[in-house]
Length: 120
Image (cartoon, rainbow, N blue to C red):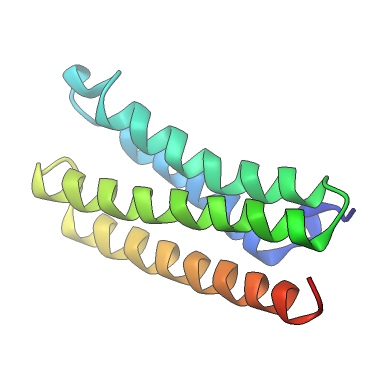
């Protein structure tokens, strides 16, 4: 068991969640329970699954939660594209979010591979 707050990937995922909350405040009221909610849940799911995995008893379980976080990262990747195409996000916001999501996905993949290659 390790403190998730010490993981750079968790810190980046937390910052992404904060950014998604900030940006989605400006979405149309009709999206309050739609896309804005989906984006917020997806973004918080990344950091939450990293945290939950760190509280588990084995590297195998941690890797499983990192896989779930990876799925949430893919989900938020799509949601940001949809938000851009619906013109809820400016191109510059989209590009910034896309870079952040891609970095988090690479970090999750690398961390998962490291865990799996150390004898799961």
